[in-house]
Length: 99
View 1 (cartoon, helix red, strand yellow):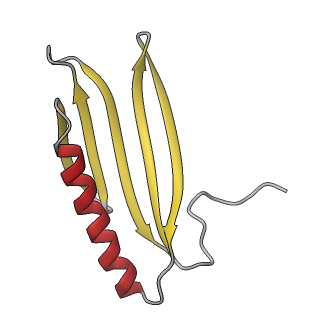
View 2 (tube, rainbow, N blue to C red):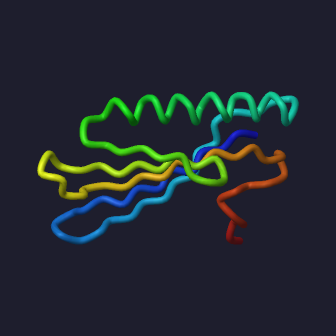
């Protein structure tokens, strides 16, 4: 199963407003299929984010795409991390559910 973690930190009224979200994207019959689509999703995220004016994009460890957005004056306004993982259907990266 392919999952995407989206973490963003946004400057709101001079304070930081963090948000973390996990999204289930799709299931695949094999790890190889999932890995192929994971790479395609990473590349698409990199290309999309590079088109945003004032955004710097880096590729990090563990299938992460890291972005930082700046105003035209160079002031930092937002950071985003996109992490993609392939996991078995028995693993939920969001962690255990409460009872």
